[in-house]
Amino acid sequence: MPHFFIKSENVKDNKILVDDKENFNHIVKSLRAKVGEDLLLIDENEIEYQTKIESIDNKSFTAVIENAHKSNRDLPYNLYLAQSPLKSDAQLTIMEKATELGVRGVYPIYTDNCAVKKSVAEQKTDKWQKVMYAASKQCERANIPTCYDLTDLGTVLADDKFDRIIALCEKNTNGSLKEYLRNNPAKKGENILLIIGPEGGYSDREFDILREKQLPMLTLGDLILKAETAVIVTLGNIVYEFGK
Image 1 (cartoon, rainbow, N blue to C red):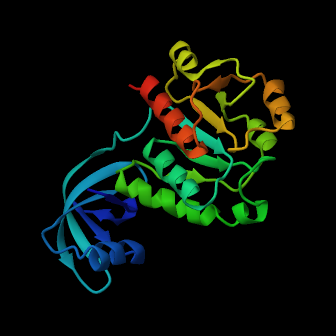
Image 2 (cartoon, rainbow, N blue to C red):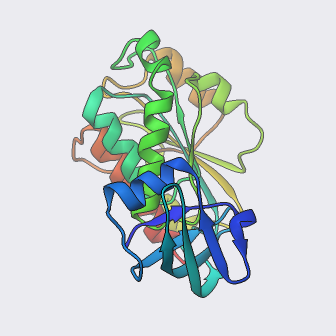
């Protein structure tokens, strides 16, 4: 069952008032929810509420709380993705699957071999954010990841908030992802950034930037994967190896 994001200020006396237009239209008008139906709601404190709809009027509805608990649908570390945007549906797939796999945020990076024009990618942030928001509801995430504005490789690497940065490469690698993950387990609360380049690969200039930072430059193996497949496989491996 998908859940819907609410504000804790709307929780009072074991009931929740849902009066924002987006949730009301989605739940009552699109999904045609009725009085007596079960509904999952979650607030900004990651408290999930199992509720039952008590009443509905023209602009709002009230749900009675039957159970409440801290959501556990989150990773024990903070995983971020920096990735060169792809065209159309492939990029939407990445945003959706990255959300399902627990990333905290996605940094679209404009690379020398980027598949889309810079002016086009700059206009897509809002659309990609909406995809991540919808995916968060569908997979019952405890929070909504952030799609950051288009940036570049050097700017992302200069951000000192990351405790660890991993680059996935198709050449010039210094190890396999599998071995690296098994030998370098994640720490609770650690900020980890995964970087994946464009389908055309990093340019020589970008490889120089990665080498200068002395990052782990890792390979998935001998198979040739499309960029969107590589993102999903790599994130999946990280989540699996760094599992609780």
